[in-house]
Amino acid sequence: MTLSFAARVGDTPFSCSEVIRGVGTTAATVEPLDFRLYVHDVRLITASGREVPFRLADDGKWQSGGVALLDFEDRTGTCVNGTAETNTALRGTAPPGSYTGLKLKIGVPFALNHADAATAPSPLNLSGLFWGWNGGHKFVRIDARVVGSSGGELAETSAFNIHLGSVHCRGGANAVTSCDRPDIGEVVLRDFDPAVTQMLVDYQALVAATDLTHDLGGAPGCMSDADDADCPNLLARLGVNPSSGQPDASQQALFRVE
Image 1 (cartoon, helix red, strand yellow):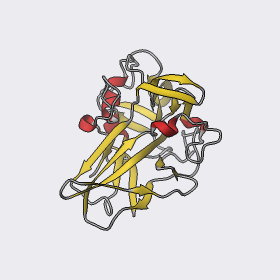
Image 2 (tube, one colour):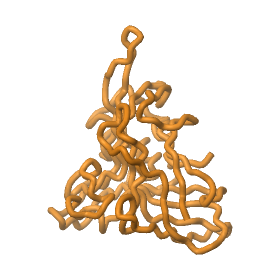
Image 3 (tube, helix red, strand yellow):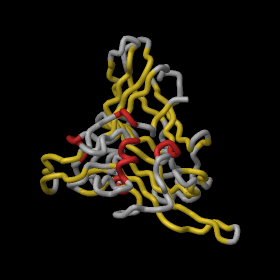
């Protein structure tokens, strides 16, 4: 089976070559810089509510060890950090049957998160998606540059980056034992056939409750620090409980189905 995804900004297809207008609580204008995220623990939901594992096939590039990278940037326009190739699908197997929904986790499981990225198989070997030994991988990297208007021309004003990953981890190099905040997101989508319906990953829905023009402190945007006032709304919409750092799909908004 193949599960297909598309990046959107509301009703508009995401593009690295297009300025994004009207996002966040102040209808900000931003230039996209990056749009990538890891997922794992993919499950299909039957009509009776039973969860059936969707086993990701190792392909040596986008999927390995039960982890997949969805990559919507193509290194054109203002997206300068990523790769020219994109990946907008999950490929794997599941028992024949009728399915009416999908569950997945955003992130990298603990057992793989703190391995050496320099020797890890693709897609866990990308330096741009790795914080370091203790932090592990950036589960989500959605970067943007907020721009203003000057004499009718767009002028750069500030960065607003969204990086999701585990924080407050204990241990040293290659020996991390635990993380106080795993920050693994949970996604639950129901009442559709995931085998035939394209799922959407929506930047506008993610930042709908955020003022992108006014950073509230800490790093520009949100780097998963629960004490950063920019983070709680974004963590909740990424399927993470802002208080505990545990998976919580109750306010998840990044993934949706039309």
